[in-house]
Length: 171
Image 1 (cartoon, helix red, strand yellow):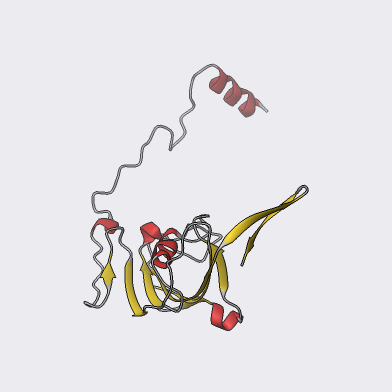
Image 2 (cartoon, rainbow, N blue to C red):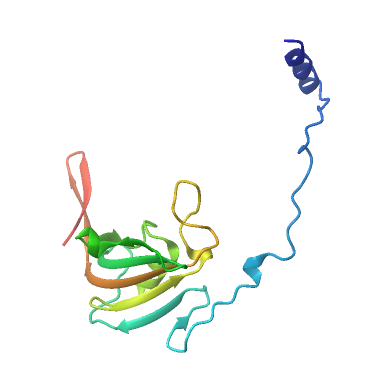
């Protein structure tokens, strides 16, 4: 009780007790490893200014997906060590996402944005464009992610309102 009272008195009076980490700032490491990473890819891969790396296996036909449209696609995801992290073929159904809703990893959406239905592409996503990292996800913040994507369909979507109910319907 005496310790609590003393601590309360010190904090409320403006006198700061000496905590070991109090007032210390973390200095930036001049050897930040992200500055020195260079990904070496064969000539048949395209590297964009954002850092995204792509390779088209087949182009497909039709229009590119736009914001608000629903894209249906199959994918196989790998981490940089080659371990498979997800696969819609094994799950038995393709993924469906509306473009422009920030429902996808930024690099993944950038890679799909200029695909045509029927196209197949490998997308290599750098950590800066990757998914959020943390203890609740299986992604590492310093890891490249690789996705083999097959874009199956692009559909227009419209908002439908019935009374107090509202949803989005894609046809």
